[in-house]
Amino acid sequence: MAYSARLSDIRPFQVMDLLEQAQALENNGHDIIHLEIGEPDFPCPAPIVAAGRRALDKGETRYTPATGITSLKEAIAGHYASAFDVEVDPRRIIITPGASGALLLAAMLLAEQDSRILMADPTYPCNRHFMALMGARVDPVIVGPDSSWQLDDGLVARHWRDDTRVAMLATPSNPTGHVLEGDALARIAHAVRERSGYLLVDEIYQGLTYDVEPITTLSVASDAFVVNSFSKYFGMTGWRLGWLVAPDDAVEPVSRLAQNVFLAASTLSQHAALAAFSPECLDELEHRRHELRRRRDTLLAGLKPLRLVPEVIPEGAFYLWLDISCYTDDSKAFCQRLLDEEGVAITPGSDFALQDGNRYVRIAFTTNQARLEEAIARLSRFLARQESKH
Image (cartoon, rainbow, N blue to C red; front, top):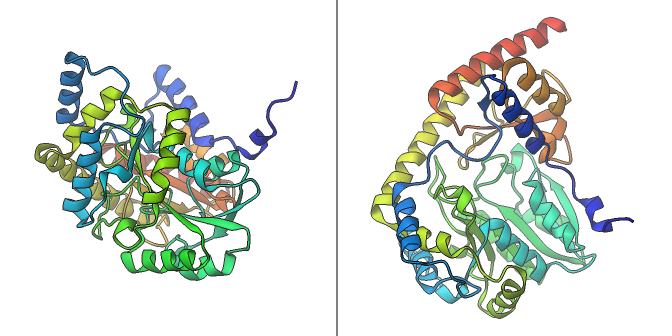
């Protein structure tokens, strides 16, 4: 018996196989440096954990409304007001099981069978896969350093077709870490609006910026669909909590979808997340952001002598997107050998880029300074051996 044909559009995520291998090596006593997964080594902030415990003690374990508890929606709206000077009606905020839940709702609402979706190549692969699951056709737009690895309004205009419905952006982006500024976002929003399309923006790394101030698309395009998460900046990965900001006229259909798809996000996680916006927690999160910048700069300095320098310095998230073509044209094999020979786990670019992914790797600066320095030393040894073989 054959399974659904839609599975043919879903490619495996190679980094998960590498993670499984890395963990198996660790279990057998090998010292592995993890630079492959987008999860920093910081623990969940203490105020959030304490709030979760209090909620559990109070018996906050029953279903919530499908779109989330009102107090959390109001807290998120308050964060938009205080951090970005943007007013968002809490009614427009739909709380979801992770950012993936938000993206699923947006894909179900916006993608039609055989309609076209524009997004950058490279991008986070699940962004493509969610649209493919809805029967849409993703048109990957090849981007590079000249556009800071992002779509722009010119690319949107050039690649838009009569059956294109959605342009999807990610800022800061995964895997490249690049940020779209407000003017660029406004121009893209205008280009999409002129074509009667929808703008969908992944902002899950919002807040994690290093050389520019964080912004939200909602400051320049109130009609955009915006996906966000408590996983990255707020450090709540395992709590699985995110949100979608929808235009006013989309709230009812999105709510209807939420009721049927997942009923409600985790009650305990929602109550814990209320503490994410406390002054104590925000101070800790800012300290972590500065630490991530130091880690980025440590890697940039250490990799430069190895001829591994990003073509554009990332301004956000916690990744370096590196061209390794001076050493190999097979990023998957490169990452496999680096893990096997030196115990350093990084991600092949072919996970993210349909075009030229074999020339790139993604390195996550999600471990401490000492481990990053050790990773650079191991990588240096590894590359020296590669060159000696040629």
